[in-house]
Amino acid sequence: MNRKQKGALPDGVRKAVDAEVFIFLALFLGLFALCGVKMGMANMLNTMMNTAYELLMDTVFYIMAIAVLAGAISALFSEFGVISLVNKLLSPLIYPIYGLPGASSVGIVTTYLSDNPAILTLAHDNTFRRYFKQYQLPALTNIGTSFGMGLIITTFMISLKSPAGESFGMAALVGNAGAVIGSIVSTRLMLRHTAKVYGKDTPCEITCNQEPIDPARFRVVRKGGAGTRLMDALLTGGKNGVEMGMAIIPGVLIICTLVLMLTNGMPENGYTGAAYEGIGLLPWIGEKLNFIISPLFGFSSPEAVAVPITALGAAGASIGIVEKLIAAGQANAHDIAVFTAMCMCWSGYLSTHVAMMDSLNCRSLTGKAIIYHTIGGLCAGVCANWLYTLISLIF
Image 1 (cartoon, rainbow, N blue to C red):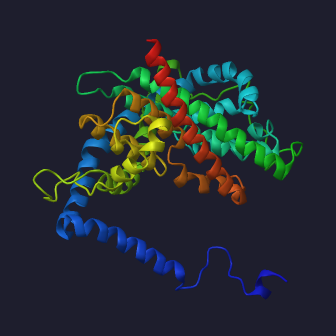
Image 2 (image 1 turned 120 degrees about the vertical axis):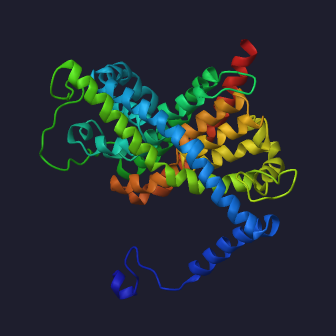
Image 3 (image 1 turned 135 degrees about the vertical axis):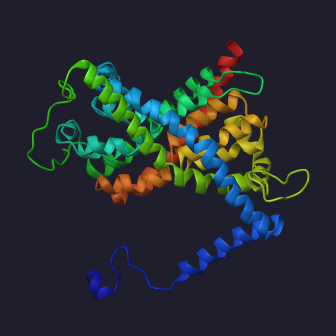
């Protein structure tokens, strides 16, 4: 009996009014009622608007400036062969560590310099696909996401300083190490599952007979002399940084505003509708779960839990919270190491995994990819916590 005989609706079509409508309304109105009852409806709406404006002016444009510089540097690295050199150096390490072909190192470098979906461009390149078995291809979503926005997150964390002038360079590097460990866990778990689905011997499908260049042997460069190529790479890379900065605006303003309102508490003089006021829900939850969170992640304050929660949906929004926590004395270098690991490893995977898996024609495996990446991100945070603790004891 086929779908039409059963009367089933096609994918993407639902009844005009079903249980989902009422569940959504209950959750949506419940959230606004929770904030409105405590803050007052007028104060809640004013805080929402003022927080979004402050985030746009103080956080988004700062992140965009970093993205422009990082984009220019990454374009230079690509144009003058640094990425190709890194690929050759990393390739012998990739298969023993990740169980993926050495060509995956190109995807790691590309996503580290840009964002999660950048690896999809490679995944649709026939030369790149020929290195892979079919079961290995879906794992590109996990390994690519683990390094998404890595350069921007790391640069942002290094640029911060504590109220006492403490630098967070070492903490950011430890966070990168934690993210690498998380990426290994996520990718290996995904490969273990996909090997059962496809088998280990099925070759990867080639979409057409086109023969693009072999990225292991050649690289594409811009036309003109070295000076022209340098300026073109700088400006094009900077433009890509602007586009990335624009792309994070919705995530930062929507998700970060919501999380900050659930994180921050009432000011000493009561609610006024100013930016960054809130109801303190997440710290309350953090305190209740502190017996689990403290040994795992070592956060110095309950408010710190807001950063990894935000990273589930948007890495740009999550790092936007960090500066506020540092200024309030609610985060230190130890926290920065864990933040870097979890923000980089998760890097908004809940908002990108579905589209990425669909692009790879692996929609049915999306749920497993999300579960395994959740585990990988948690491992990244735990490892960063204990690595930084160990380094602190030694030095």
